[in-house]
Image (cartoon, rainbow, N blue to C red; front, top):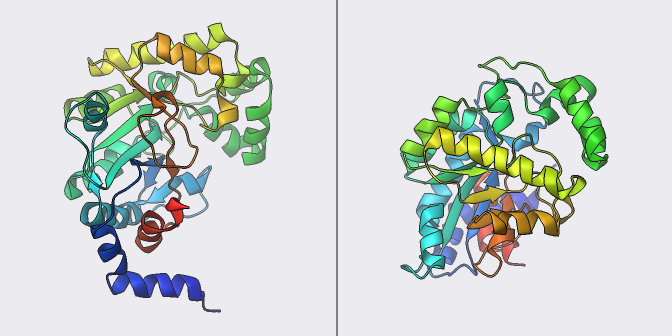
Length: 301
C-alpha cells in the first residue's frame, strides 16, 4: 500500500520545496539534535539493544546533507559565546549532539560529520569508559530484555544500583555497544569536539538523593577533565525527561558552574533556561526527507 503522505514529502523534497522554504526562514531558537550512536550500514538488523537509538551511517550522512545545505551547523562554543554577548547566531542554527559516549561516535560518526563540515558535541558516561563494560541498560536489555530496563528506570535508586552492578560485563571493543576509550575522548577534545558530562554510570538522577547525585556528576566531571585536559561546562541529563531529574539536579549543576544542560524534551533551545535546554530526539528510520520536513514544519507546531 502506498504511503501517500511520505510520497508527497519525497516529491516536495525533490522539487526543492524544503530548501526554498528554509532559505528565507529564521529558527525560533537553536535546533539541538540528540543522537546516541551510529552503527555501520552492514551491521545486522536485530542484533542491538535499543536499536532505534543507533542510526545507520547512511542515515546520518543523509541528515548531514540536509543540515549542511539548508541550515547553519554551529558548535556548542559558538552558541555559548552568543549567549554571553558575543557575535549573534546565524538564522538557522543547528547543534548536533550525541549522548552516552558510544565508540561509534568516533569510529563511524566523526568521519561523516567532518566530511560535511559539521561540528558536534558528545556527552559521555565515564564509568563504562573506565571499566570497558556495556552501559548498564544495554547489558540488562541484552540479558533480560528492554522491558526490564524500563522497570529499573522507575525503581528505587538502591534497587537500580544493585541490578546494574549485577548485570555489568565486559564488552568487546568491536561491538557497536562499546563505549569510547579514554584515548578517543582525548583525541576528540583535541580536534575541537565539545565533550560534556552525562554522569558516571547513567542513573535516573531523580531517584537518587542530593549527595548521590552530586557524586555521580562530580565523578564524571573529574574523569572527563582528566582525559580531555579541558573544563567540562556542558551536561546532558540521563534519559532527559522532566521526571528523570529534579530541582536538586539543576541546582547542583548551577553550583558547579555548568554553562548549559540539555534535556530530551522536544523544542527549539534558547538562552531563557540554560540548564534545561530542549532537544529533538533523532532515531533510526528518519530519512533526510523527514528531517527536512520537521525542520520546515513539524517542529514549529
